[in-house]
Amino acid sequence: MIKIIRTNSENIDFINLVKKLDAYLKITDGDEHDFYNQFNNIDVIKNVVVIYVDDIAVGCGAIKKFDKNGVEVKRMFVIEESRGLGIAQKILSELEVWAKELGYKKCVLETGKRQVEAVKFYYKCGYKVIANYGQYTNMENSICFEKLV
Image (cartoon, helix red, strand yellow):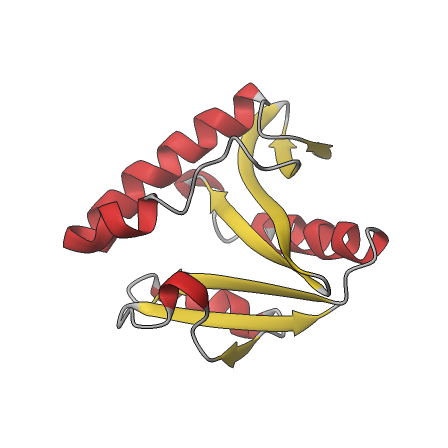
């Protein structure tokens, strides 16, 4: 059975999933990991989604205010054993609905070009490439996306 909960960054299952995400990103980001990691502090995130399959936390994602019209999608992750089952799409959809409920009109996000599966996923979910923003402006490995919600 699949269950989706809305919570915050104090949720222990979210914290444990983020640790797994960070371990994965440390490998794929290589020398740039420390740069990216400084922008992924979770203690300021109030809007977190965790998804469970048979009471086991298998994926997560979060949103935080980006500007007056939008939120930034952060910390999207699904454990390897649960990939390909539509879990990430359920998480992202829930985050988009939540953003809309909060009065936002768009979601933006950054991912690494080396995360090929993630890039394909965001295209599939209707996200469009935008100019790299903020701290990602001059990062060759970054690709930024936006979607109206």
